Amino acid sequence: MTRFFLFILLAAASTASAVVIRHDVDDSKYRVPASEFPALVDMPGEGHGVLVAPQWAITAAHTIPGNSDLQHVMINGVSRDVERVVRHAGYKTLPQALIDQATGSGEAILIVVFLASSDDIALIKLTQAVTDVAPVELYKDSDESKQIAKIVGKGATDTGSTGHSPHGPNRTDLRRAFNTITSAHDRWLCYVFDEPPTALPLEGTLGNGDSGGPVLLQSGDQWLLAGLGSWKVAQGDVRTARPGRYGQTSCNVRLSHYIEWIESVISEQPQAGANDSFKPNDKRGVG
Image (cartoon, rainbow, N blue to C red; front, side, top):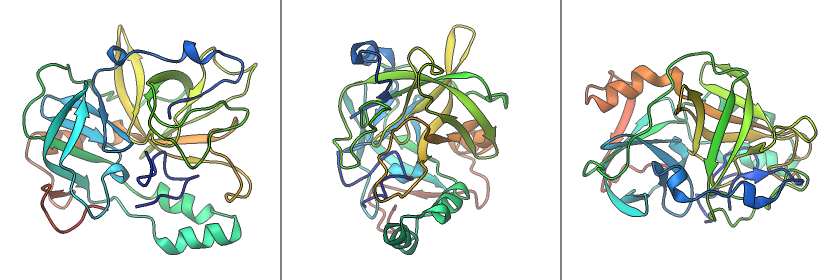
């Protein structure tokens, strides 16, 4: 299903570059080998997730293909079969009417309101446990604000001075960047893509195709998973704005808010009414 490029979604399921970077820093400083983050999950076509237990990956719910089956994902260059997907019951698909209003008027504040009220999170159970990659631990504290986060992804790339094309490509080389968490509350943690000279040395932001990708916070010598790329906000007419420009705010699923839900699903004791589970051949749809 085609996603409205500016606000949702750092992934558009109808297309298949990576982290958006500073205009004054060479791209080679952002590129990293796959060994930098082997627990990264590549969703079909585009979008990411993260391995958080030997048989479980976590992602933004909107990366799950709409009205189709999620049969497999890629981890560490290996295709992994999917046994089932558990999507949070609070996830809501963006109504087409809101998209139509925004594309007709150029104003999309109601899309922001809608996205902020949705639980954009899902868990993927793999058919077999992953033995060649170590899962990433979750960040469980609620002190994310003002910390420096590391972001990783293969989505759309360009620089903050121009932004990236909303039309893709949305899957290229792996990059990582850093940003400062400006706010963290309830479902979301957010950061702003600052322009030099106030930006961090390797400041960046996730691009289209990076939905579900990791936002990591450091604890000792470990980087723990604190968030998942979800959507971003830009000022001005959404029909002409380019995603990934300086000054835009990226909002990410705040995993500390969902710790009990995550642990209950992984332990196979889901909370009543808290999730929606389906198998790859379930015909109810997953959009």
